[in-house]
Image (cartoon, rainbow, N blue to C red):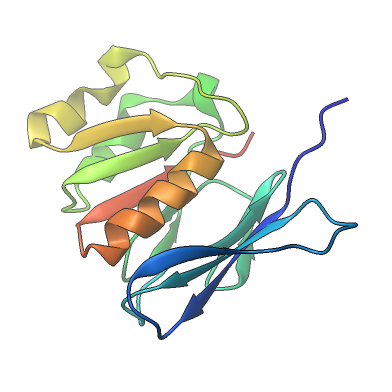
Length: 151
C-alpha cells in the first residue's frame, strides 16, 4: 500500500523563497511557505485527485494561468485530442506544464503539434511536480500555464 502525502502551500510577504515548515509528527503532510508576488494564482495544496488554487479545490481537469483558472474539457491522457493542445496553444504562454496525474505519462507526439507550431514549450510531469514547477515559474513572472488532467 502506497501512502500519499498531503501537501499544503502558504503565502507570506517575505522575500522570494520556499521554506519547509515541520508538520505535526502524526501527520505525513508537508507545508511549504511560498513568498513572492501576490495577486496571481498559485497552487496552495494538492492531494490524491485534487489541487487547491488559492485555497479553492479543483477535482477535474483544469488550466491554471497567473490571472485565471479555466475548466479543461480533457478527460484523461488516453482521451486527449489535438483540439485540447490547440486550446493550450491559444493561451499566449511560453510554456505549458502538463500534469498527468499521480504518475508521469506522455501524450502521443502527434497530439501536441499545435504547441510546436505556436512556439510554445511543453513539459510533461506528474501533477504534483507540475504544481510545484508552476509556482516557481509564476513567481519568476514567466508566462506559464499548468494543464492538469484528472482521470
